[in-house]
Length: 57
Image (cartoon, rainbow, N blue to C red):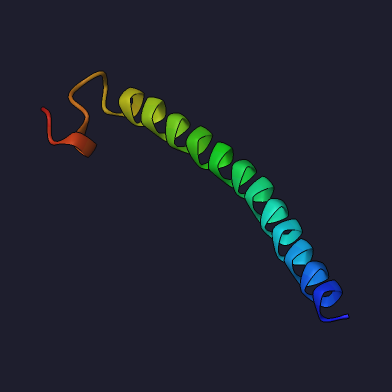
C-alpha cells in the first residue's frame, strides 16, 4: 500500500512538473516575442541611431 501511495505521489509530481514546463515554454515564447518587438520598435524610434540598450551610440 505504501508503494502504491508513493507511486501515485511520484506520478503527480512529474505530471505537475510536465504541465509547468509546458506552460513555461509559452511564457518564454511570449517574452522573446515582446523583446524582439521592443528591440525593433526601439531602433525605429531612435531614428536609426545607436541602440541605447547596449550602450552603443
